[in-house]
Length: 508
Image (cartoon, rainbow, N blue to C red; front, side, top):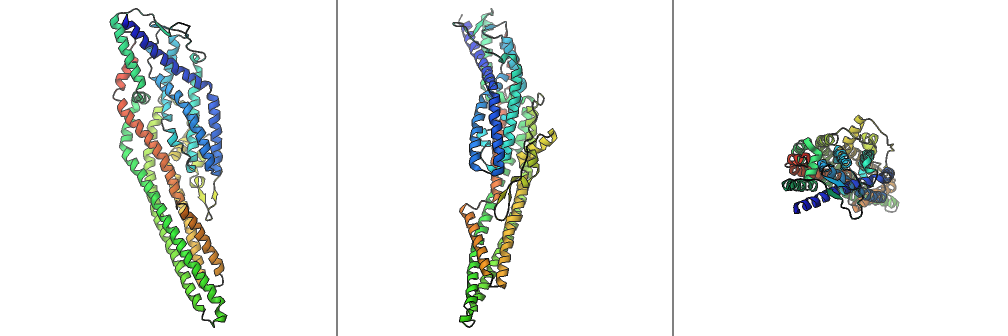
């Protein structure tokens, strides 16, 4: 019969795809230890990079990391599709499956449904998230380590299932993969064929698959994220605007410092010339000294005004940044809570790693400290496992970067104020004495060179650089959540019908 041949072809395709998903899972799990070893080696390199701040090294390591994560994608995709596969199709009453019993395949499908919620942890664009930004190294370490732990846990569950211990389908020469043994009416076969079409559509539809991962939590995530989506976008925009303003202030201050120090050098030279030539000009050349003192005083006033202005404006921007960060942090915690609830819906398969948690909790001292001379010093750290409560705190701090306002405050009150103070002292001292102007000219030259280099490099402040790095990371996460939100809004419309289709017995 034609309908019987159509049913057999459609059933064969569905079964073959299912077995290929299982093969994909088995193949990855067979080499998972090697994959894990490579990722752990990358983690160690990233920890060293966090100490030494080597950009080229980070570029190379993350290139390897992204290649490794691409190898993970087919495995995750296979688990997700098995989770929306009908176990009712694999009934010994319907067909013969060469090389394996349908019942053993059913057990794999059941396990996939149990494990699938853990896939929520991987729902992000790896290439966007794992960008080589030195300021984000700790967060990248944290996330990659969690990827490793969750992957290990998934494979550990897979290995417990004996169905994956050997080849699950080996067709005999000339034998079809599936041979229907069911004797039923033509009408019943039409119903089964229509059922198979619906089952295939469920597996192909990424929106439906995602809705199955969220289950009853789908609407909650939609509601929570919808309420905060626009505000979080605006907060990121405000943070980026703050970074622009900080750079603009640094540019103006650098220009002012260069101009003021140049005036100071001219004043110093005039003061020295006036003193040197005083014996030969009957004191007339002392007018140069007076003029030089005037220029020195002008330079000192310029330095004082620049320092005060820069400090006040930066302080204003830092307060704004703190406000934006707090609001963003509060929203992120709620969204992450929803996702954690989804991932643990079948019970926590694995606890998140606490890699570098102590570092994050140290705040500003861990991320970036700078002296007036520009030497970078990074605090040491040691990875360790901590309790679940401490881990949750670490995750919140990593994802929301509470250290940003602290770092901003630290930088503005050390390097900038120190420079302004040094310049003020230089100018005041110069006005009082002309004999030490050689030393002061050297200092002015130092500030000119220092600020000129800053101008040449674009005058990007350390604070704005850190803000931009964090904002890039958060934007990546926000875009991943937006994609999930938009997909769920589509998938949730059909999930009830799709669930009924999967639960419906394949035999009419």
